[in-house]
Length: 151
Image (cartoon, rainbow, N blue to C red; front, side, top):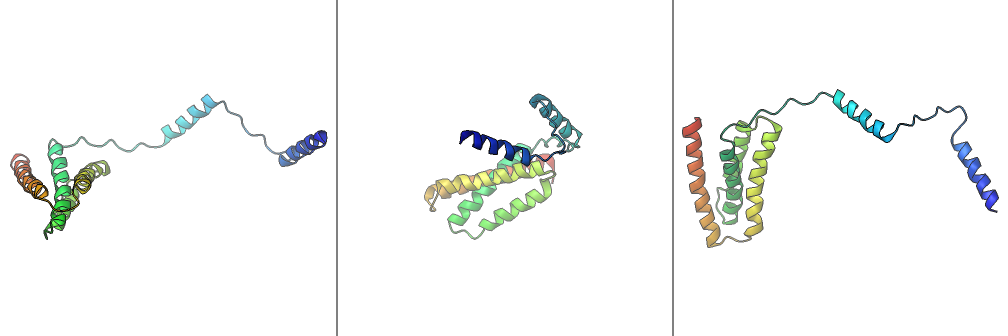
């Protein structure tokens, strides 16, 4: 019985690879990895991203505060919550000169929004204090950016 099964297995193997079929090229693993690396080298690389402007940290902080204000103002029933989302969209339109920069700015906005969404489920006196502090800080940062870098 075992010989019969072995014979059938051998026959199936021979039938699976028809005669005259081209043999597959066997490439050592190390060489295959270097050949794939060469293929990647041939593809044109994207141009390097320009260095961020000197005011990038302030814009990231401003983006994060706008995200927090969008969430907290909406949570506390203020009608201007969507204003901060619109201001962020305007900031992205003006400052997102590359996809990477847009991702950084939008990421900061989302961190601000999500961070406070995890902390506050209802409007509390502490949430109102945070709103007041962020409004003050955002005004200072905006004024500093305008005075220092124009705009």
